[in-house]
Amino acid sequence: MKIWDKIESISLDEMRAIQDKRLNQTVKYVYDNVSYYKRKMDVIGLLPDDIKSCDDLYKLPFTTKDDLRDTYPYGLVAVDMEKIVRVHASSGTTGKRIVVAYTQEDIDTWSDVMARCFARIGTDTKDIVHVAYGYGLFTGGLGAHYGAEKLGATVIPISGGNSRRQVEFLTDLKPTVIACTPSYMLHLYEVMTESGFTLDDISLKAGIFGAEPWSENMRKEIERLLHIKAYDIYGLSEITGPGVASECTAQNGLHINEDCYLPEIIDIKTQKTLGLDMQGEIVFTTIKKKGMPLIRYRTKDITKLFRDHCECGRTLVKMERVTGRTDDMLIIRGVNVFPSQIESVLLEFSQLTPNYQIIVDRINMMDVLEIRVEMNENLFSDEVRKIELLERNITTAIESVLAISAKVKLVEPKSIERSEGKAIRIIDRRKI
Image 1 (cartoon, rainbow, N blue to C red):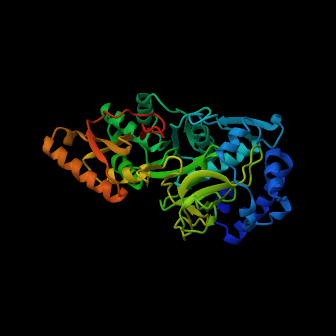
Image 2: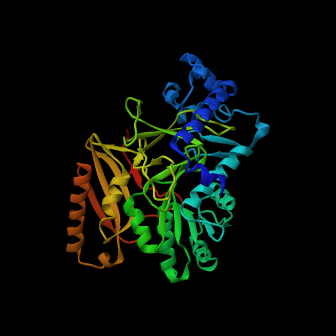
Image 3: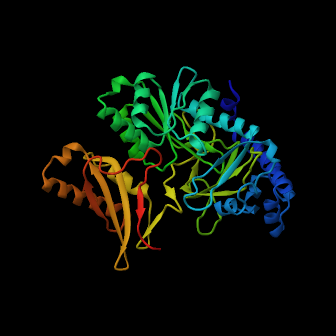
């Protein structure tokens, strides 16, 4: 039995002992090697010896994306640069790029946790894994690649884009597992059917999807269209990349690799730590990372932690599917709105495709919400009266969930621009 199998099923007391030891070591490590953390701890009068166990985690200061920007590029690196073997970075679309540095030990840990994620969905050495996440500064492609190779699977490092070539490889090379964003999987299905291929031409049995929020209904749609099992995976570049948590074959929550990434849920307003089964912002402390360890990193992702007796036998704490982000959350006329809420409603209607956009504007000092969603081919060729009736039904369903009014506009099939990476779901035209 490989080490990642064993550590995932140890007792809670055994896991807690590992976490306590690694947290204590990490706090001392950053205090001694990262001047930024030393200053933050000194300001509040906190010494490394004050952190004796996970019960003391709340005493530590938070780390935010602004901290990473303020220390750009290498201000949070804890080792000499000659020990850094890899650098990844964010796109920088919301400000200065976030740079993340890895030692070889960090790369090995990342490979191990990603191997666990693939193993959880039944991937083994007989599988061929089609990696359609982008390679390069984005962590998705290389993270999935290294994990699948560590497991001993065959890897097709096709990266993102060039969808017709993707379909060619899916039909010719017969991969059994695919890794990409869920929206891109649906786009590949469209390209495949447009090219005259059917499910008999491919060999996929499972997909591991992440890098964007997606709903349970989108999972059902992917599984219905492609006859595969669709699994959620979670990660973020600042912590390590993909592999922080993932679903197993039970598809009931994502197991967190908590021997490497110590999770907690905090109240968004009070910043106080919440218990299990309480929704809030998930915060991670890396307790095995050497190149650029982070203490209590605020992810801005909304979820909750829970424990159950999982049928897979793993004892790792679970997180629910991320329902949205505190910074992606739309506040419309004083109401918090997450795109996943809207998506879940839209996918209840069989006459629609999973392609939609949420457009927010401000007219006469009033926020206006419009939801554009594509009809399927059958509805598009139907009577205008039936289309208008469906628009009204969807509007009613949306309003019952969001508690605010919204305009629903059904548009032609394939009229919403496709993305080969993360889908662009929100267009906010307000000048806020």
